[in-house]
Length: 449
Image (cartoon, rainbow, N blue to C red; front, side):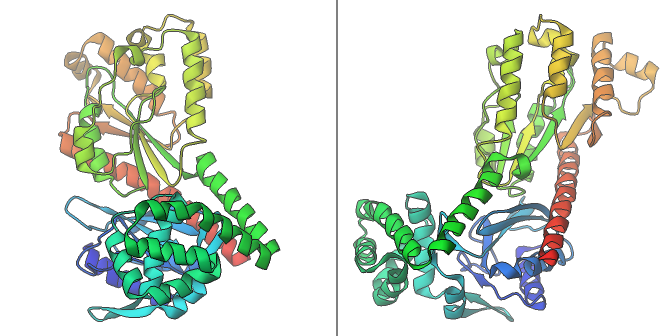
């Protein structure tokens, strides 16, 4: 679906559900294009179920990812083209602009002060200039402690042209002096001075909130950290896929580039990973993918001792419970089961009973994909196609994969483009099914409340 059609359909669906929304930023190119990688909507927290129903009701797209934090719900949809080659888009429904749970701009005030903007025949709300500039500045400066240069030219202009309105919006949360210092630093374009304001802004935001609403503020801080712990330190925001490529085929490495490019924006972070090794940087653009080095050294490729196996297992379990700040999709091209099937390739000389024991303790995947060299061939044809050892390995991979909870077997003889397309379909189908279960639970919980 072209982005312009999707945008109009989403606006209409939200209005049908009675959701009052405000597009926070990056709306300048609407409806022709989306400037950012996602769309940020400001809503009230009680309207999140209606917003989810509105998004799910749009024909031609499907929700493939959902993660809820203290202040925002991240949703990812498939079937929207924002640029050539892009098939997915992120939608954020935000209901609180805060730092560590303490609000710096009330949602109700933002919605009341929002102004109308026209897209063809559709009208929607955007923040007032002063509020938009504050959001664009503080979302990185206050929350992250850094300045997002992308938004600064517009922020600087609004602060200069609307100094009184900006000061009036900042004053309730931070007080006169810090608000004055921040406004002056922005107008002057003094970046070091802006960064020096961060500590005092945070301290005064918390102190003023505790003095005015102590119980509510403490509950907000506790709720924020509780939700962030669930996102960052539990597997609930992690989706994992393993691509099994039996020895002799060697197609997985060639497919990774194209596949990850196709999956762009299907999750907040897309990671390419190998068992027992560090995570490679998230690859979210074709340029990054093209420049990435998929090869790793033979030293890292081997698991030579029992202690190394145990260490790899521990690292893998730990990776499921840390280093996540949003929905993450991990693609594994190799995994521990390779060691069980072809131990000689890993120079493993320990007891196989121990390797199988550890194999039962290793975390599994949401989806397994096997590249089969001869899925429909007869026994005699397979014997002619490949050597005896390769045939043994292929049979072992088949026997292993079909015991998994969710798996797909693809014909490795197909072209790289066709294989990548089929793998993409399998992955987004899995993501859509998991997201559907999560959303049903979320909507059921909102009804119970």
